[in-house]
Figure 1 (spheres, rainbow, N blue to C red):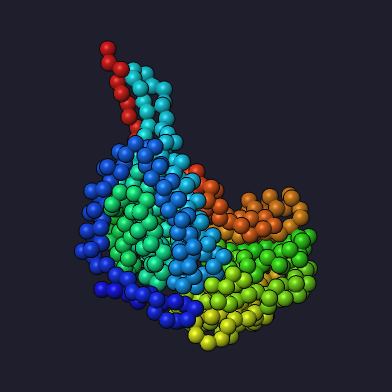
Figure 2 (figure 1 turned 180 degrees about the vertical axis):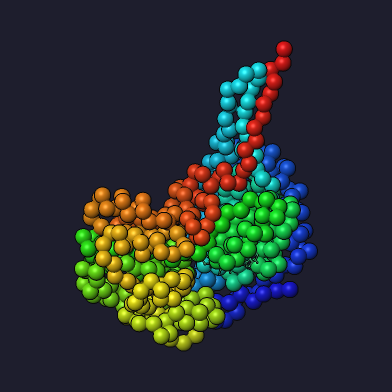
Amino acid sequence: MTTDVLNPSTGTVLTSVPSLDEGETDAAIERARRAFPAWRSMAPGDRARLLRRFAAVVDEHLEELADLEVRNAGHTIGNARWEAGNVRDVLNYYAGAPERLIGKQIPVAGGLDVTFHEPLGVVGIIVPWNFPMPIAGWGFAPALAAGNTVVLKPAELTPLTAIRLGELALEAAIPADVFQIVPGKGSVVGRRFVTHPAVRKVCFTGSTDVGKSIMAGCADQVKRVTLELGGKSANIVFADADLAKAAASAPSAVFDNAGQDCCARSRLLVQESVYDKFLSLLEPAVRAFRVQDPADPAAEMGPLISAAHRQTVASYVDGADVGFVGNAPEGAGWWFPPTVLLAHGPDDRHWREEVFGPVLSVLPFKDEEDAVRLANDTEYGLSGSLWTRDLGRALRVSRAVETGALSVNSHSSVRYWTPFGGMKQSGLGRELGPDALLGFTDVKNVFLAMGD
Ligand code: NAD
């Protein structure tokens, strides 16, 4: 069976890729299981060298990978280059890990007690369509570095860069079957990662509903699981902030990747004393946001991923109080203009639910306490931002907002060497940074008796 892969900027078919069935998925998992012993016992320095070589090969193909993502996912060329570079950087970062995966020596009487960080075996990675390259890399790089073998399922809509990364791994001399791409449906391939006993951990990034079903499925085998799920992050602007800077950066904080970003700051909370002033600064920034052919280096935003998704996004705007709207091309492709909606309270559907499109909801707040209450009034807790010149408030609010990654007077939330992940129903476990590696291992304690 095959699936057609479309270009979201034009709606035309790019190519078609295999969609594997359960038997083919089992065969891939079995190959990964057989490849595990040799990969885990490879000298750490050799495993590190192979991962560095993999990073170098990715770097040599950076333009090709970026171009593929522009065509398959509608990402702007600037973003797509960053994403391919992120795969390279994450590989290089975790290539430093094999020789440093150090256990402990714990004092005991009558012998020696040591701990090992043992790899788990086969790790199954399930990737969504919104950031096909980085999310794949955040899973496979630390998993491989820790000595696991990997089966990776890309999203049905965006499999092309993952398939190419699988080929590049072989070109870099990563041994056969250590890193396999298994394209296919979530309900077939993804589900099999959950139910197959040889898969010892599932790393899932996607919607909260599917994530919950994966967690429930993994419970059956006490399978390890990392979940990176939805978000509805708040961008909180206090009256004392640099309003011009906060307004200039608010559009990209939500409209980047056409809002199809789990970290999108899609709820804008503005202190009521500066609400009108702030909206008057925001409007020109939204209208100037450049939505155009994503292959053009000037593009700040491309199309939505599919016709069905555009319909879902539009359903949030129908009947809502529209503040102002930016521009988008007409004609073929699944374009949607940056849209600012005025919320009338925290029960508005567009304020509560993850739209996953270029839609920003705005709500005024009274004071610090009110801002924290409104920001936390959600089941999600992935990222967020706050703008203030008051250092004490910045610290208080940073600690009070229930979210995994927060930025003050900026919107950055992803650096490959710092942890990333969600609180509450936005996720479980952390990716990236120094700790993610240990999530792909189990601690083993060994006591050696000294003898007489
Ligand atoms: P999705 O949950 O529909 O699909 C994600 C992946 O899971 C796809 O590969 C899909 O084929 C697979 N899948 C679907 N059903 C499955 C099942 N029953 N068993 C196993 N696998 C299954 O999500 P999506 O629409 O592709 O992605 C958008 C969502 O992802 C948004 O909610 C977004 O917030 C979230 N997301 C979160 C993060 C994060 O790091 N927290 C990052 C990116 C995206």
